[in-house]
Image 1 (cartoon, rainbow over the protein chains, first blue to last red):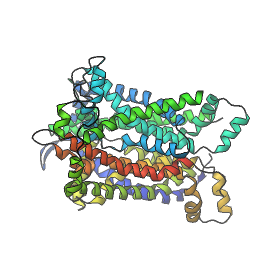
Image 2: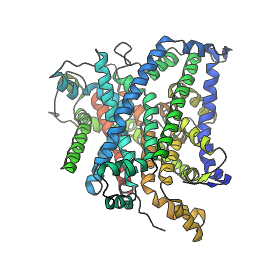
Image 3: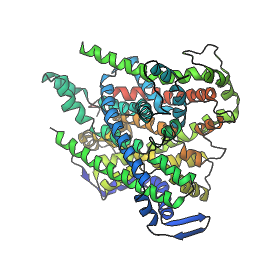
Image 4: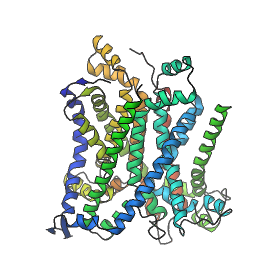
Length: 289
Length: 267
């Protein structure tokens, strides 16, 4: 869509800028401050330049956590995006069934993250948990002992918890497509697949871009659920970046390396989000027939 | 036949989704000792002790009140600043628009653990510690960008001819925006309101950092169930069940806005 050129539009954006910048800029600068200093007490610090950054970039355990994180986020996106879209397409469109489905689907999103982890601890216990007990009837399964089981459990929890976000966004995007488009497709005798590919998918581009970016960012920054459920174990097999960051920054109370780590972390998320965003924009342009 | 398969698949998904929630309900109706002692597909001796404890102890139920207050504040603030901004992004080209739009989202990308400390310092300095508005404002950091992005998507789906027609018909911007434009994207407003509510409701790190007693969120109170004997899982599950209720109500209220979509040609 061709947009109007008008710099006065800034006035509409200004409140947003002020309210976000208020909470964004000072904390960010403070973390930059941490990352360049060695701090060993209130008011006792010395400037160390890029030392922490070099140390963090060379940190082997950080690299391991990073690869684990990429694998985790990749799997999350591969499973949740298609599943979420499929579910949105399969959802009832009107009546009490649509309302009931909406409410039920939203339920997992509404539980505080640490509680989700705690409930899943019991849920997956082989002796007293429904999931653990049921699976152990067939194969030995214990997420506290075997890395693969820990991953499967985490992925299940993650998919259970967050697919609804993709579904809700996709569903709302579908509902926003005017009926005339479907009528036109019907007249043209379009199949369900081509209706999806040429009408629904391009029209959902906006909401799906958001869903994709949100799922990427939030899964890349995931902390509470794996921390509560597996504590990063067994061994280090589920120590994702955030869990390792908290180990460095808060448990050892090392603000310098923690700050440097945070900034590197931030830049990685930023970079990937930017690439994804550009790519998704491009894809959308190509599909506009 | 094809339609049926779709419906069955969807129904199976809903059932799978309900299983962990059923388990939480099951746990919430049992005592902690009972939960840890044996496996039970359904609670044998149902006890409402966990729920009674939450409703009778003000340190518990005030957690819900506190969370409700700051989450509502946050949703109202986020929507009211994001609506005009999203309109600007969807309709106008202006200096730095693309950078600004992406910058907004970058505020969701920082790992929260280390950033919590500067937040604490910032809000202590301006004297807002332990107030609801502090948490509401802090949550704006990630909710306002989200609201702008979601709303922009919906607004871009509305043909610009509608704006042009309205302006030709003599509508001023505020009147057009409130009486014509917002009703047209009410699906988007509904979804956005729900997501703002949801993310503010479940976020704990900042909420816990910025509160001491007066505005402590329910999620932080729940972690107090850790005692010498370990977690009280029954109490925690009951509290968890109750944390679902307000959000479920919100989505119930916005369901029609989500389901109806918008009717073209209102002008």
